[in-house]
Structure formats: structure tokens, C-alpha cells
Length: 235
Image (cartoon, rainbow, N blue to C red; front, side):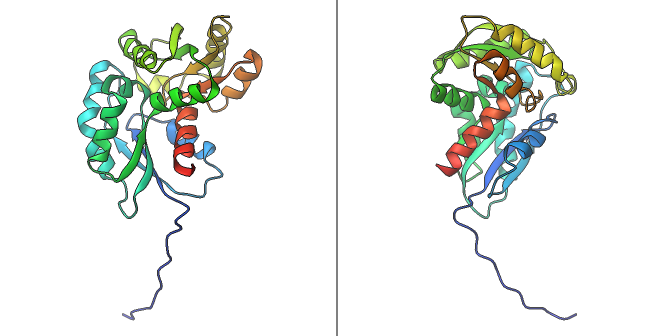
């Protein structure tokens, strides 16, 4: 065996890595992030967290104790300016502050965001506070989500749901179904914007079309999370 010399490249201090914790059952967040961050100059490191096949308040709450282990699997070579936890509904059940605390137990992350926190920041940046909520969730999951947004100053008096608990079906809800539902809810004159909740529902090719037709802002879990992580990482 011949020992060969090598040199070490210095890390680019302007390209701080981002961390992303994705649900085991999620099939949508990573592909959509690849599109949202197609121009990125910094790496995005991904870890998975155990999650139930169905979305209920019990399966969402169970993720709290699994967060430190999932965050611990992210590379530790450099600190993170931001780590994203990819679950909107669990963030409403566990609480954004608690999510951040659990992730920071094992990961050197300055800020931890999630789709709930991110969508609230996006709404405030846009100056809108009256949303139509489109979700795939069953009612026991919708209630804490709407309450969490209300605590952030965002009302969701207009809302509709596909009422589907099974993650595999949520990931396969058709593009046209999402467009039709968002248009139906967004046409209500009392709302200023539409929020499509759930990282597992496909929205990347939907938002621009619905926004153009409604002439109102349209946000989604994945769009909001990617926007907020970009803001936090580069600002």
C-alpha cells in the first residue's frame, strides 16, 4: 500500500450549512426543497425522524421525544445558522419554542424554524393576517393548528380540509384537487391570502397558478419553510 499525500480545503465561511429534519413518512418535502433551493450555494443536510403512518394529535406529539435523536444525526463539523423541522401540524401540537429547544439539545443551531413559524413570518412580511386554510388533516389536528396561528396574529376563520389521516394518500392528492380546493376557499372576500398546510402535500407547481387566478398571496408549508430558512441563513 502506498500512502498518498492530500490537502484539506477550507470551508467557505459564506456558505453556512442548513439542516432539515424530515418526517419518515414524508415523500414531498425533499423533492420540493431541491426545486426551491436549486440556486443554493450552501449545503442542506437532511435527517429523518420517526413518524406515524397516520396524522393524529397522538402521533404528532410522539415526535417531541424523538427530535433530539433526529437532530443528533445531522453532521456536526460546522454550526448551523438555521435548522428546519418539517412538520406543520406537529409544530402546533408540540409548540415552536419546544421544537427549537429539543433540536438545540443535540445540534449546534442558532435558530430552529418550522412551517408554522415560517408561514407566520411570511404572512407578517406580506402584511396579511386573514387566511383561508386548506389542509389535508382530520379535525382533531386542524383545531390546534388554527389556534397556533391565531396566537401568532393570523386568523383562519375560513378553512377546509381533505380530512385524510393517511400520509401515503396525502402525498398523492392530485394537483387539480389542490388547485380546485384552494380556489374555492380563496375566493371568499373576507380572506387576504391562502395557506396550504402540510409538508407532504404537493404544492410546488400549484402556488403560482392559484395566486395568479386569485390575485392574492398563496403560501404553503414547504414554500414558507424554504423562504424562512433562506432569510435566516443569508440575512
